[in-house]
Every structure is written in C-alpha cells, then in structure tokens.
Length: 160
Image 1: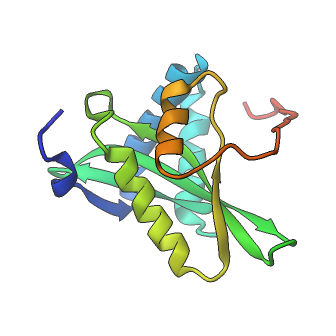
Image 2 (image 1 turned 45 degrees about the horizontal axis):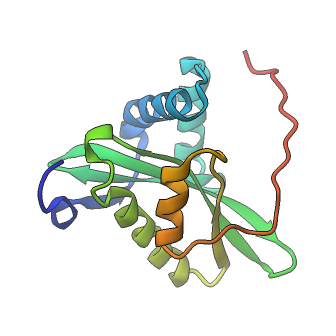
C-alpha cells in the first residue's frame, strides 16, 4: 500500500478503452468471492455492452499513477413507490495491494455525491455474499445498513 494513496487517486467514468481491465477485475472478483470461473468471452461482451449503453448503467474506475486500481459498476432499478431509481453498486473490485487503503471509500463517496446530484435517484443499494465480513464492515462504516429484504434468484444458464 502506498502512503497518501487517497490524495492521488483519480476517479473517472470507464470507457471502451477500459474493457480489458474491467473484465479482468470481474473475472478475479468472481473467483475470489464465489469461487466461480467465468467465461471470459461472455464476460468481455457483458462489459462492452454496458459501456456502449448508458441505459444499462456505468462503471467508475479508481486510478493511481494512470493505473486502474479499483472499480465499481452502477445499474438501475426503477421504484414505482418512489418514482425514482435506486442505483445498485455492483462489481466492486480493488487490486489486492490497495485494499484497506480507502480506495472503495473514495469510489463510494464519488458515487454517493453523483447520486445525490441526480433528482431521479432515491438511494443506493448493493448486495454481498453473506460470509464476506470485510465487505459488510466496510459498507456499515460508510453508513449503509442491512435492509429488510432477502434476495432470491433463479439463474438461467443459456449463455454459452
């Protein structure tokens, strides 16, 4: 970890030029958190898809000395109850040697400020693996709390 890392970090929206870095981070994320090996071709197409279609969401990157050291993705969930969107924080990844140095906090604060500036955003949400205690602690430190909702899913494996 580099001293004064946060003072030198630049946060910016990802572009098509960042596909390889984002896909690599997402591949590592799935392996580290869920012990899943993702299909790199599908993953790369998925990253490209969101980068070319702002309606799906967007990525922001944390850079230090022009090197990408962290990322997160925002997707949207329309809430008819609130007549606004929740921004879902997903695909959070920080390069291992920069973890616990405030990189995620810097990304989160950037997104929080951006969301507060958009009148059509009513809140931020995220989900995490139940056993990811480090992430849970980090989210709570940033003022997030566990909601009353349980998450259920039905996955279709029709993407080859």
